Image (cartoon, rainbow, N blue to C red):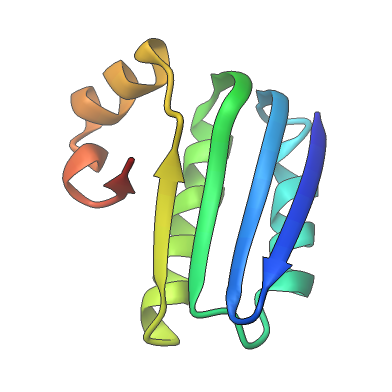
Length: 99
């Protein structure tokens, strides 16, 4: 997985490329843990992400809770059809802001 980040003031965008799975979820978690200080708006861009496993979903939920506790927001963008199906089947489409 390749992760790139762009910070603009208190907004952070993370672009994910490849698969967010059991092996790569800790990498995303570590990046977010170190990058979320003073971030009020987090956007995770899934345009180049092929697959999201349950381990990836756990990182997304933990990050969502962290952002909510800090009175910030989190958005998922460019969500593919397969990932959207997973979000809808789990009810997470009602939890996350999706663009």
